[in-house]
Amino acid sequence: MTFDVSIIIPTYNKKTEVRLTLHSLEKQTFDLSRMEVILVDDGSTDGTLESLQGYYPAYFLQCLRSDSNTGRSASRNRGIHAASAPLLIFLDAEMIVEPDFVANHMKYQEGADNLVVTGVFTGFRGLYSILSPSFKYSQFKHCRRIVRKWPSIRKHCTTARTLKRYIKRSGRPKQLVRLAHIDSGQYKKLSFEKSFYYKKHVLAHFGPELKGFHLPWIGFLTGNISVKKALVEKAGYFDENFQGYGFEDWELGFRLFQNGARFYAGEGIVCYHQEHPFSESARKAQLTGNLLKFYEKHHDLGIALIALHQMGKINYFEINRTIQEYYHLKDRFPDSFRLFRDRFVRALHTLLIKRARGRKVTGSLLFSNKKKPKLLEKLSAERKALSRTGDYKQLAAVFGILLRL
Image (cartoon, rainbow, N blue to C red; front, side, top):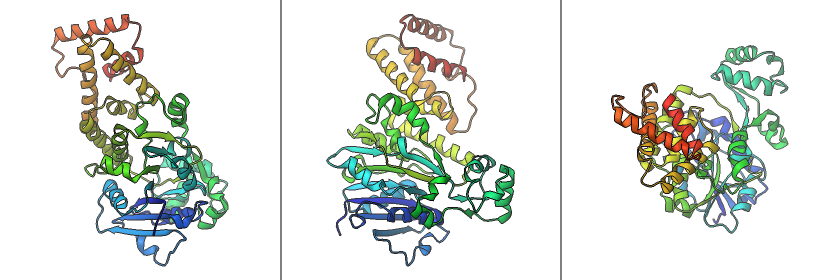
């Protein structure tokens, strides 16, 4: 069989969510006979594949299973190896998509050999399809405002606490979205915008072609991305040394960018992330550990600056400006400000290490031992000289943040 596109979906214990996702792919305006869906079950224990027995959609569905949980990278790599189409779309198991999702990806990719198309910057929405007893209170507080008009849950939404009590008392998840709601489009009433931050800090400044943006690879989020299989093979697949949550997708995106891939933020490629419970502490530990691994693999300034973004100290536009000013300073004054530049990068690396090890960010990030008066004096002189240039204000501001941490 010959296909134009292979859609790769890794899943782990999301039986109900993935069934809704697969159903939304049945509703595509794209010719279903020209697409294959590869579902990689990464050792689920909730009967995911068993629940799909007897399910025969109009598209070709290939189900792969791992006996144990191997991780996101390994699951996606297995899907890539099994894919027979020249174009890959990566989709998460809990992503419901609109009917023109595949057609729009194909439209942008037509005639392009080195293009990565991301829908996350413009068409990323959240969706409360299932209410879980394991939701945090903040999730109940947020979802109540959205689901209170939904008929089957309305009377239990007086307050966030009443909704929480009702769901917890039932002892099992409350499914709001059914297959018929996808057919009618009613599920959209339970959705909310999640692309706003990208629109404000990335697209507003760099446009859909991301011109002048040094970090287009942050758009390589595997919930909604398309790329030619040949490009992924050339870049070297997902790095399976990344375990747990986060940065395995950005790391591949970074290598694609290094290999000359262009990134484009496509309009109208909309997906709806089915919100689910998660451990905030576990996710933070995995994120900080993987970010350190990401940086130490590539030693790129933009990667290091992501740590300050995680801490809410700097946005993506400011990161981009910082990168520009750092390298402009280096090119303009190759023999000056060396201590400033060295301590700037070292401080970021130290920050990454401390966060990855769960240590408090206290004390100087610039010197492990403050009893270095000559170095401190020289650094102070370089900062004053930098200020006198009248330029590099963003770089100086970020340096100040590192001093105050």
